[in-house]
Image (cartoon, rainbow, N blue to C red):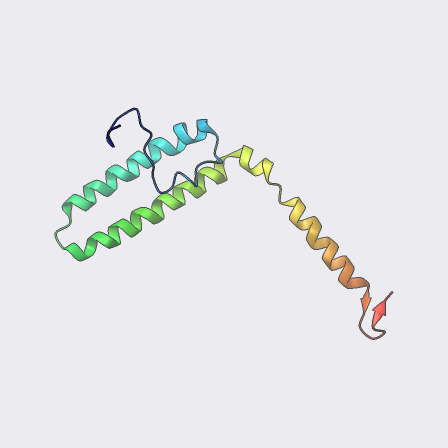
Amino acid sequence: MDKGSPNRPTRRWFDVLLRRLPVTVRYRLFGPAYEDLRHDHLLRFARVRWPGVRPVLVTVFTLRVLALVAACYRDNPEFVLVHPVRAIGAGLRGVVACAARWSPSRSRWR
């Protein structure tokens, strides 16, 4: 199959980051915002006269895409509910409670 075939899904460097997002978030939230970023990037890239500025523009575009991916995860309530923060807090409480029972002066547990 030809590389530019419409039947073949394109592989982008950030597709791995989007795997855990629901399909609706990917297509309704990320897709249009990414296309706007890409369009803006291509317009800026075409106007550049100095070759040294192009790597800077690519870096800025990459950071903007990463910020967009982070915003999609932040705005997705399903991702937040699947990974509760309370479990981390419970583990830390256990460590603090265990450390509070230790008495350094007696060098043994209370």
